[in-house]
Image 1 (cartoon, rainbow, N blue to C red):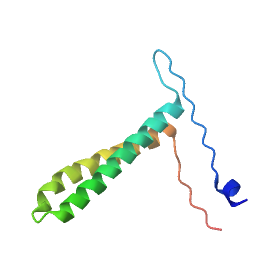
Image 2: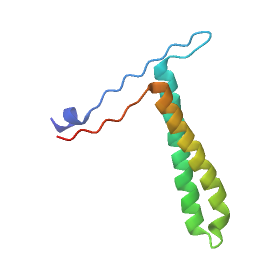
Image 3: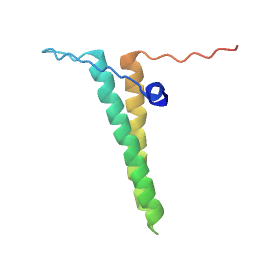
Image 4: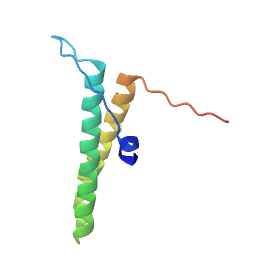
Length: 88
């Protein structure tokens, strides 16, 4: 019974036209790039903690942070995400 409650179905569809991709494909691609950037930040941070002179790796981490920030802004613009705060 617990296994049935923990299953989550995810349906991802995309259509490839000559000039454009569907919104789901764009969102999935952007989410993949964001996940890749965040994992790169984590791996570089672990490597930086391991090295004595790890300050050299701060520039690539800042570069990945900038890329991730821009990808999140692009995802927001493409998908039209809105954040609403409710005072219940």
